Length: 309
Image 1 (cartoon, one colour):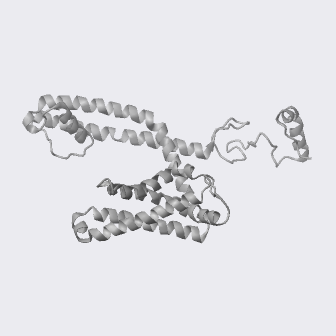
Image 2 (spheres, helix red, strand yellow):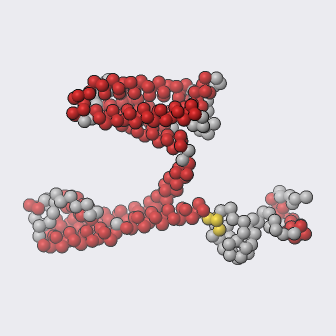
Image 3 (tube, one colour):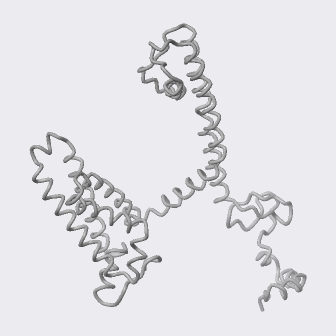
């Protein structure tokens, strides 16, 4: 059963819930895959309708297809709410908001021209493929990346502040060096050039014309190449740290104090000491195990542990 949502009743509502919110049965998988195909088709129609040549030729077809998709998604949303115990809880969830936005623009287009352009948000519903295919390892890796990014936010923020100072300094210098005819009419315009040059994008719409300005451009580009690895290195270090925390335990070995053991390890990788302090080493003899439990007599009473036998 779904851990977040529950069916609102027995019979038809439970059956609908199993098909719509679960993916363990052929019917549920078929429903989800069919829904994704329809979502992709609806997004394709919105994209093609934005092309002037296609809209002029098949505009009426796109119009009726869009209304067909809207009616289908509206009925699907109504059935979702019907089979749930708490429909408002679903509407407040991420997918509930996306489902509402997926049908709302077409209805709003009846009163607000151009609102149908927001229908492209339907592609977000394709994220349900993670639930269909049971790609839980990808979800876990996604959480690992989010956690790594959260840890790296502070140093990356400081890095961006530093880059902003550099960009402002370079922009002020190039504004003083270059004539206005070259395009450097203001410091904000020069900041735009500085960002484009520092990131080595080089649009070429604004370029220095004096030798001193060109020399400064070379310095800015080399600086960009030098510092571009900083945020990548910071983020990579946090990813490695998160992976290590996922894989390794911080508990120290009672024998040698080593604290980099894989989670689930039973013996120390350096000295071979039994790591579980709550149970004796199963390789000990019965007498040694009995002595181990006797030595822990006080702790057993405190923690409510009972020795075997």
